[in-house]
Length: 230
Length: 63
Image (tube, rainbow over all chains, first blue to last red; front, top):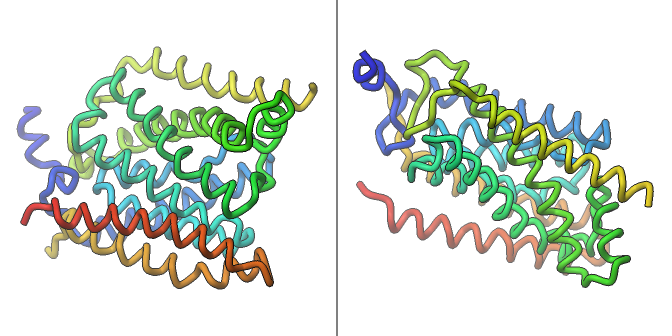
């Protein structure tokens, strides 16, 4: 039965073809999901970004470069909606899509531990891309809540690169872990024959994963709040 | 039914990078005004790295 279901699944992530209509439907919806998440996080001054959930969904289902397209569309749209600050960070969205997409293709999404590792890896690579953008393009601060962390770490005597990367990795880890598991839930909600899979784990018995995700997010929020109060 | 493959995804991903390059001068001029050159240089460097990655993906992709 499972083999029959698997054979009905679309297969872009493993190199096969998927219907163009499915791509045309999913890519804009994922981009809009990113734009809404990013706008809400920005409006509420949340210490996370929430602008890569759709990217993760598309990268893990359709493949890395379709996810990259979603990332570019997202940040260009955000650039026109909320100002051009978002545009340089399109590169971060692209890198996140590549990590999620190729990670899924290489089997990092087929059990809880590896999937958590994939989420952390996406956070690390996105921060590696974001830190040079924040420093070279914006001089160290972009107006995001994570700037508070950067200022706190700078005040403790660390250098600019250390401060920006450290604050970014803290915020990014919470954001990417949350985005990954939300994306997994969205993929799980898709009809079975539309779950274009490389090996993506079934969303059963997710208690520990939810705890890890919730703990990470709460930890980051507490860190930012405590840095604000100090 | 017309189907697309991951190679098509690679193609549109590279098109997306091209669109980013087209938007960068406007974005840097809006953000930095007369000092746009440094910002534009930084953004071009980042995008250049991604374009190199795209090229590597094209070379490694199987027909």
